[in-house]
Image 1 (cartoon, rainbow over the protein chains, first blue to last red):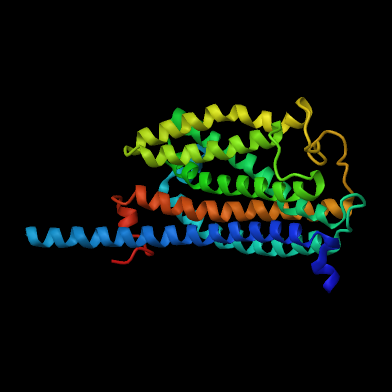
Image 2 (image 1 turned 90 degrees about the horizontal axis):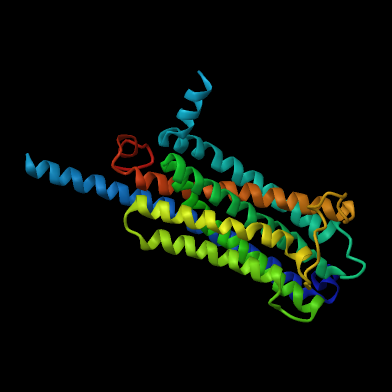
Amino acid sequence: MMEFFEMGGYAVYVWSAFGLTTLVLVANVIFARHLLKRTKLQITGQIRREKRIGTTNK
Amino acid sequence: MTIKQTFHKLGSPRSFDRLASILIPWFLSISVLLFAAGLYGGLVYAPADYQQGDSFRIIYVHVPAAWMSMFCYVLLAASGAVTLIWRMKLADVVARAIAPLGASFTFIALFTGSIWGKPMWGTYWVWDARLTSELILLFLYFGFMALQAAIDDRKNAAKAGALLALVGVINLPIIHFSVEWWNTLHQGATVTKFDSPSIATSMLIPLLIMFAAFKTYFFAIMLIRARAELLWSERKAKWVCEHPEVRR
């Protein structure tokens, strides 16, 4: 098992490369989901605002 | 339904949104499975290289990321062409969704390549053709995003972005053939060439699995971003206001 993590002496290089890739890919999932969620909330807010304006005008 | 009707329906924002929300969980779960298999294959199953030892395993993130960086750019430019020729709103939405992903893949390719370069070449960076043209690709993505963000009018932003994306296509053959045209530290193609790949099958299979993992991952994230962009640009439309995922 130790041998696996040592990567034949290249542990620093191999694991930092895989670590960085994982970081970037996971961050992209989080950002994309956040963007979709925020967009839906913004649209909800917009609809509510328009409803309020609509009722005061009547 | 005729082909034209099918095409028209797919191109309608509402059916795109519906199709995307069905596809996203599929792409995501398939990509997780492929990543698990590819990582096992690349880190455990594949034997160490006879020259590079275990450091060669960086190939399993570096090469798929580099391929994806170019694949994304082809899609970005194609969406640009569709935007300019047919003024299709969906094309602009997709382009906006692709750009940050393309930039991410390019960054991964550059960074992991740099990490790989240190033990193999003795340096993190050289200003040779392959590395420089890939860096230019990163700046093209940044330029596209900056341009889209800087222009308030959505239609003008789409046109300017599309134009930039199309002009930047010239960089793609330069990246691909840079290792043949100029002297470089970077090795030549081992898989994407006309002869049979000069890589052992036990090393190639995990690479192809990782490539499929990156690709399905890309489509999942691209569709999530595209949905967000589309919902926002269609926020005045009835179908968005009545969308079951938008709370009232």
